[in-house]
View (cartoon, one colour):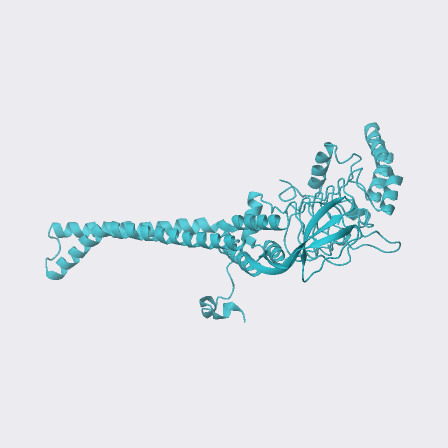
Length: 450
């Protein structure tokens, strides 16, 4: 049942939530008018009190008991009013300090919860054997529930007695609870939003590090993702509107660099502007995900699903999408299933992407001379000879050969490589070309550019 049905607003018939983002200019005006009214009433009260006091002093009002009582009350009120106001201010400050203290305590407790561990007993024994492949003895632990299988080069094993080992494991349940508490804090107070996002991002970086970034030769099924890591990604993906506005205003990006998130589910989340640099993102689900201006530089994106995701202005410079190998008559479902308007593929290996849309759609993308394409797309680029065609266009512009120029531009436009660079990724001029391309598409604000 809708929570609004049991609220005070619903009782008064006000079921609609207020949208404070609309008519924001009227907010300060209302504040000014209300302040003037309150101050006016206050000064009128002061004037009236002094007038009454003066009348009493100069015997202009009756001196009966009721009048004296009223006069006494006015004098007491005038003397005590400043102290009442001061007490109210102090009490309000104490409330604010108390609330900040409670919020800080909740934040600290949640951070401690992210490091929760639990001990588990496991029975094993040490095994020493001769590794003939390296001509040396090695020692490792054999577990009773997972007996060691010896290789042909591992000979003459010497085993110790079974004993109990204490292993430390992450306490997943406590960590997930801490993540939800942090999410609640960020939603309750936008001033804590970015602090919480930094904490959760750091948690992912520390617990899902990628030490060796090489594409897997073959992926049969989605890799397992630890539940706390998946929960952390889900929390990041459903940030509040106020929080995302704060990031937009201050040009802040989620930092998930150098992580192994293979198999993770980003579906329907908002990771626009995030730094997913040098990441293993194989077999990930990016369906219906907002990835506007997201930086995937040097990441491995093989076998990932980008169906209906919005990758407008995303940076895939030197990224890798070279698996699975395209088949004749088939088509891999990868970034070609997303909105790739303004995407940068400079220096990337996208040899597993055999279709980048119609020529009109391709013309909104950006690539470089050393971008590795699928076989059919590479044949089209080679047949075009982009550098030679651009030289011919510049020559026709200088000579004022309008008919020749129109034909050459039409050839370039029909190829789909209209905004691709004839230079390698390492050439510094590519930065200027890409910024010019984004400007033509109207992508001139954050997160497309810093």
